[in-house]
Image (cartoon, rainbow, N blue to C red; front, top):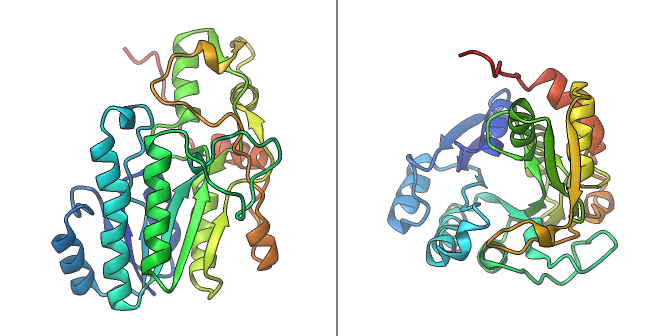
Length: 288
């Protein structure tokens, strides 16, 4: 199949390319290749390439900066998605749209299902929710995938940041009252490959199974690396200065995956161990 990926330079884009290019024709468009906010450019690119499937992974993802750059965040996440959805609809292409757990406020204390009502806390989450609405209104053949706490080989994420900080300091302060489901981008990419070839359109919560706090996530990272010398100090999120409020609890229930008898993602600890031991390359911090 012919697949066009927007935002192909990101960490999910990297894994989508390496998973999909094995059996499909992949047109990978980075931010430099395709500005999704430029409607004419989006339509021209789509018409020229004529993909059967469009995976829309391009997004403004700086959660804190979005509070100061709200116009920019909405333009990329909301209007950019509208442009992509309109162009995909014109071609009759399937659309896979990547969304986020930040569409929820985190006030729930049981896993969020696809039928729970969104209530974003900040600009980023709200702009992504607007994007979902555009997809639902415009596209007749869409998959909206909400995911959470992404990490992968090619990108800056919680795992790589923890490792980098652990190479510099032996004591780290980690938020202990935010709970979510860490998701390995390679696992997400593999699920997308399976889902996009079906007709099971709709909204999905897609993350590695199980959940943890940020503090427990950090513990698992250093335990997997056998870095027993790192001391972690738990703190409440109220003591951690950030421009944007985060949902305290954004654990996912993958009910749509189960209802459609689709392959469930593995447990987050298994995925993390696989990433750290088989995919991640630890750089030497003492190379000077």
